[in-house]
Image (cartoon, rainbow, N blue to C red):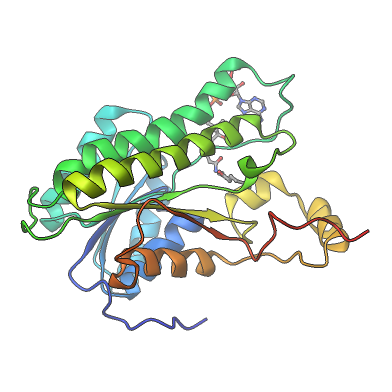
Length: 268
Ligand code: HXC
């Protein structure tokens, strides 16, 4: 679908996207690139990162990729520094890296719980922490008049309770708290806007294929007249809006992009 935004709204900006080589992260990278940004992708799988970079370059988007794990602080430091060295600035950080699997609380080991918190929550904080010196007003490569912005990809499942998702619910609740607290501290001190996006079920993502095999998916549709799948594009458009000047007064919010689903109940 064609973007409703002008093609130059991110002209001159540099965005670093974790989990940027696949799923929602890759669509955000693509749309940022199509709207003028240069993009750096971070992902754990070297081959996947390399082929994602090739796709972006074939679209004439200035792109570079780094393999790294957001759970490792040294990887975070290396990727953030390399992005800065390559492009000379960092304006936007998108934390889209996430881990997930379906398991009952009874069967989940504490290490399984910790693993998802390490990726989603601690990983998000680590990336923000390491990117701060480049994103803050007057920081490296920046003028003293404006800071950059951060988008944290969240979810809606912790607004209520979700079967077999105790680890992800806890992790995304921590992500939302991190979004609000950084918005307060870094918005005030450093002119950095920090926002989140909470996607509903999005077709063609690793999350959908892991969490909703096809048969569950069609059953859910039968039960919920409101149910429809979103597209990765929908999330990327929300991200574009938030990081562009159109979102300049939005700070500390997590925008739900789910077609109204989390608040709906099946019709009786
Ligand atoms: C139970 C499991 C498990 C499973 C792993 N564990 N998979 N427990 N059921 N299916 C446990 C392991 O037993 C181990 O605990 C601990 O978790 C760590 O497992 P590892 O395999 O060593 O972890 P690792 O190789 O680092 O892989 C991390 C991962 C994996 C999260 C388990 O799935 C991953 O890398 N995912 C990244 C891609 C991804 O999931 N993307 C989808 C995001 S979707 P023990 O105790 O045995 O040592 C998303 C949407 C959210 O985020 C919102 C949806 C609505």
